[in-house]
Image 1 (tube, helix red, strand yellow):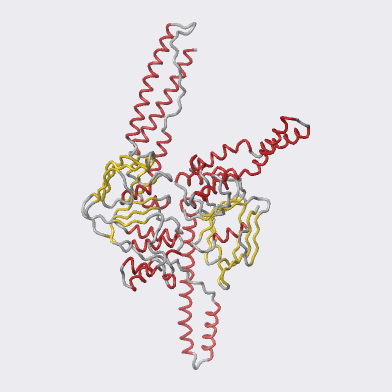
Image 2: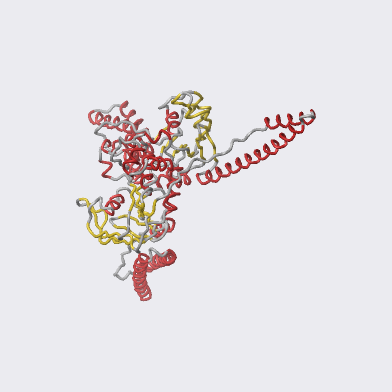
Length: 620
């Protein structure tokens, strides 16, 4: 069954310049389809057309009228006093209406009960139950736990939240509404890693239809069944996830280039023959006719357009030589806000050439840690940098001191460079033509990040600190940043929720949780494996058995001896299990040793349970 059908869709904002042109595609029930394309290519416009928020100029758009459609970027207006809890529960407005009617009937029936009231109450009760009314609390708790919405946030007024927080709460509301068709526009923005992984699981188990716009490549690999790429207003189709799309797109480019080169070689050969025939045919009509025949043949050959790749940034970080071993060292570093401690007694040492990812859930204090490191926030303890260290910093929230200045003037004044150098550096970051005269305050989030990187890359640095560097960047821009970072040989410290980016660059992980920073001297894949093994190694809830001291009735001396022996073995086995917990904690960084210990502990737990069963049988 087709849930969404688009035929020859055309949309323009400026006459003669179509944003979407003859766009045609079908979305079938149960599919999860990724919509890709450069920022500004019309992805969000397409979503607004599908929801009816925006009109279109030509074509046909069909959305299954029997299905409920919801879009994450549309945040409804709520009364000023509404809390996050109220917003989440607005997903159950119909059920809540039924509940109010039931409560009103209950008050009326206290005084006097009629058969009509009983029938109405029974009908409402059945509708409330069949609609899942008695499961509302469980569903809200499940969504809040998955998206990391705390009890404190649920009590906050919705209007007091930041834009990112409102988007996250609205995602929760949309998921609670049990929508049949989900349109998700950058759903992973403002989510931490734990919440993104939960969302992946939710989408993969979702029985409805999903269209998702995302620049999170790892996320797309996990959820997308196929890809629609919007390029120059038209759609290209790929029947797989993001990794399939990348390989297939390169294969298509190579094939088109091969066809183009073969055609050009053939045209060159025919052109050479044509020129010779024309020369020979000056006094020979037969040769002249052959020359004209070759010319007509050349004109009839279908010309393949030369395939082109998107422009790439031609930029690299300026690097300052570093002498010495230690780049920076932290000793007993602690940061608190009132009674709340973010991290305490942190002791870390960083040496030249390291690439470190600082990970943790939202709100744990990652950005605050970076600010403490750079002296922007006060903290207790000691932070010491090497004498030749010079850092460059890209914050999560970009701020320009003079937002009214143009890109060109910002480079001239803040980087103290010549007009030609300013033009060249901006051009390297794809700010060309009239774009350089835009004011920096009017740039999009992605353009602001690109502009700040342009200014940062000009500096001579040997320590690069990035806080969410890929936020607001489309996939092509992320790849540009990654290419520049790959060439950087200094120390890299970054905060990110982009698992593709983390996996590519992190050689060491700092995990901020429960007021401490754990240091994993390994890449992202091994780090994840260690955490999974630790979660699996959590002590199983072994039922506590109360050992009876009284001699069982009808017992024998042999039974008494067996019971006492089993009690001694059970006590001994519990001591062995306690020792394994200590060994496992000590071996957290050694993957092979950790795997061996976990396997042995599992065998020891099985033996303990077996001994307990024997003891119970002997008691009986």
